Length: 488
Image (cartoon, rainbow, N blue to C red; front, side):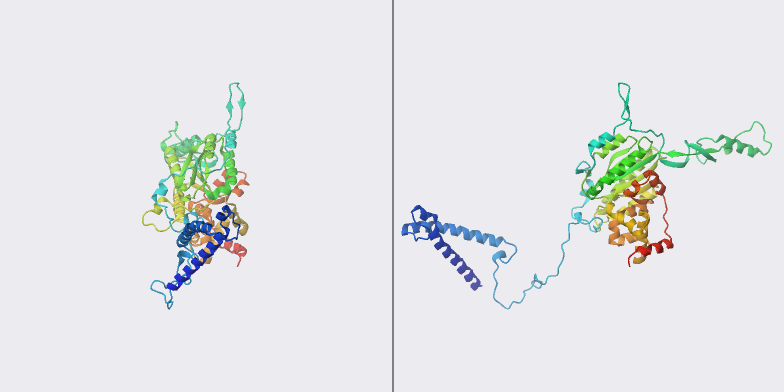
């Protein structure tokens, strides 16, 4: 150990001596006494130069040592010294830096790829879910000036004139129904099973006459068994719940969201259809606007929305279910339609999935469970995908969006040996990332749509209602026909 220390001391002494002689010949003190540079000074000037040089070089050496001992890496880290010996590793030194197995650093899970988080990130505990997401914080989505212009209504001024006529009133809804009891155009009759709605008089009289035979007694007595109830067809108002994703991943898709909402307004404003808004980001979902026919309120609610944070998609569907259940308590006859507008990349599970003892992070599994509850509650659901990257599936498989997703899943299920499409999505990594809309649609009993395809339709609501309760059944011929597009 002595040899390395002697070497270090000799090097330091050489630097000090060299610095001292350099200081003697170039010191600015010499100039004060009229001595030129590189000229050896007299004794009294040499003494002054030495008195100033000693404390200066002492402070520099101490500072250098302090800096070297603080270093954590590099060849001079801690000014290590090497002891002479047989170079045998001591206990605990079996794994040197050169032989230690490589372990890649795990990225921060909370900011990692969406839908690919499988472990609960640090800090995601019960306190995270207690916080209500702040809808008013983040980057603005809509131009409030344009929203204010769209919120104009037909109103009468004091001069007696009408201004800003924007609403074409339709005293009906958008859902074509054939089993409404109280209004519409009568098309047939039936024997009432519960409370009697509107009595169908001709069929009631004929039922009474038939009961008496060919020679009825006059006057004809009509009993309760003879009464027939009218069946109507007409347009029934919808209760539309718009579930809007305002997480940070939607930043590039907000123009498509704006266009989609404008089409919904054009088809529902002035009718009896009621529209509500639920926005979700960060830790949960918030009901921004309760169902209403007043689009002025809806536009004021849309003006509050701002993009930021994560994607708790399962919690948003649960919040929508609560809103529909509350509306059904007010009126059991409502016709709900749940429209989920998102890029369908969930990365936050439900609160109960992150409790004590839960080691797995399950945003996709929670989404499946919630979608099945929606199907059980008999709620129409439509998944509207606004992520432009996922439009590759219908182009690739030469099919409409939902059918392309269905076929791709079935083909992969056959290849991987799975029996259930949802099981396939959970098992295959790229499916978990891309098939969120299909998960919601299939497990919820609806269909998945691309927003750009819907914008080409004559009526968005008619398209959603026509396919909302469809039961897709793939045939073996469909699978064989599409296999030619799949690369080997």
